[in-house]
Image 1 (cartoon, rainbow, N blue to C red):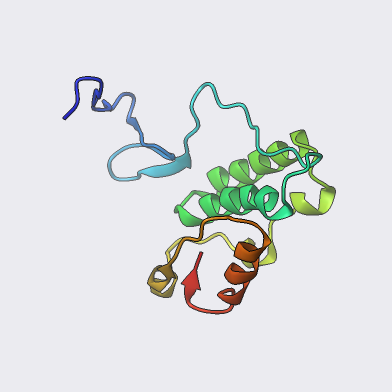
Image 2: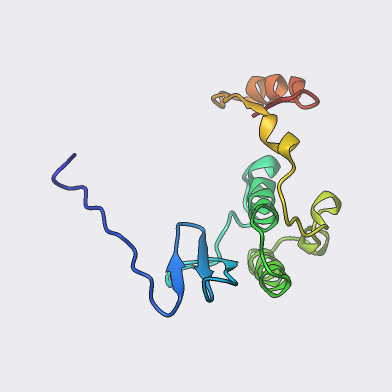
Length: 145
């Protein structure tokens, strides 16, 4: 497709294969899923002490919690990931209350509800406070931003 684009296939080694966000491991009859991070992972998100918009700071927290609740993790992998999230937030100076798992994500999801997949998505270019106002209008609808 392009001379600078190189595609490689990930080989299975020691009953483990890595994907962009997860790795699958274990024997064929009992596969387990865990969150995968590259070896150069730095646990850095937007520092709480910076002057970024609060919605950008908390988007990182939502992303981390959504990721842990989306995959069918074992209890051990789930608890390990929650601990990792707490460490990331602590290391980036987030207040204690933000280290807690949000109530609506407190349940370890093992199967995705079909209704979660029925949302329609729309994107808005941030041009200032007007864009924030417009996106808030869609907050209680089935249209997600």
